[in-house]
Figure 1 (cartoon, rainbow, N blue to C red):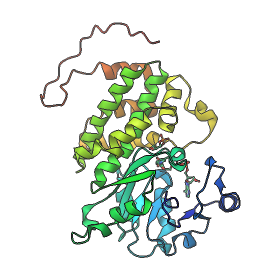
Figure 2: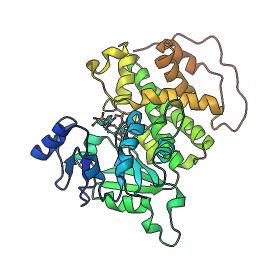
Figure 3: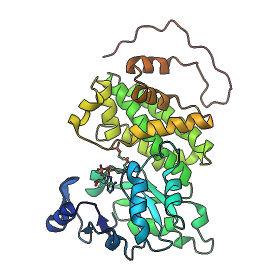
Figure 4: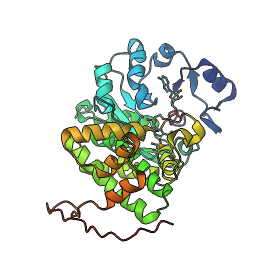
Length: 340
Ligand SMILES: NC(=O)c1ccc[n+]([C@@H]2O[C@H](COP(=O)([O-])OP(=O)(O)OC[C@H]3O[C@@H](n4cnc5c(N)ncnc54)[C@H](O)[C@@H]3O)[C@@H](O)[C@H]2O)c1
Ligand SMILES: O=P(O)(O)OC[C@H](O)CO
């Protein structure tokens, strides 16, 4: 996107042979086979060179590699360079939002996020795409807001087909990105088990509610969750097996073992880690997230998938929104469910 917007980005990867192949062919055959790279990109495996003179850094490695990546970048970053996270997740065991992790590893840098409904391939093909770029308001000078990292990055990346929106609710944006992947696994599981559109719409809508309660509990805003980085990305991710999270869920719902999914290939599925990190965090701060909890118990406690979703639907009856603080016992005589 940066190159398409007229910038001259350096694209760092750890394998020199892939960087060389990209320089030679103008394509990234390992990850975006049918999509030529725009001119202006400089692929490199030299991290010091990649970061030399950089005005901003977009971090696109998976969340599980983030601490390692920060340590590798530390000696080469100029002071104060803004860092934008494009990975989506919450760190396991610490429960840190990824921006918190980066602030700990690389103090002194404004840290933000670029998030939203953006399948890489479609974005690279130039399909009209919108996303959110969030940095906290403390990085905005009231007298020159156009020089804030969110504003500068938004302008630098925008093109006729890529439209960033700015936000100062980093917490809300990060929570949306992490939770949507877990809900997409749930959607996939129920799809794989044979259910269809009613079920998917219910999971998406109640999934948005889970995002809201977690975002609010962590100091984010409910409204952010209804934006591109929340409802937008959740809708995309729960719509098709183009999503790796949805695809994993579908395969598990169909009865495959984890080892059989993706034909045994090691595919990055952020929601698998986030199911654990989100639930560990939610339990610690006393937030109820029943759909994420269902995914967690299936993935980590070996719970039976069909029984877990039957139980999810048989929880006490609540009001929507949760204005009335009452719960009604669910009738125990549930009729037999007919799966297609
Ligand atoms: N692919 C998408 O459509 C998309 C869209 C938006 C956000 N994201 C997010 O971006 C992040 C990365 O996803 P992806 O789809 O690019 O994954 P990917 O598996 O396609 O690519 C990950 C890249 O990171 C590299 N990598 C992994 N560990 C590394 C390490 N320790 N050091 C250096 N490089 C390392 C891999 O070699 C690979 O090039 C995830 O958090 C994902 O949720 C992906
Ligand atoms: O393929 P997924 O499920 O990791 O989703 C990719 C992006 O997060 C979509 O915005």
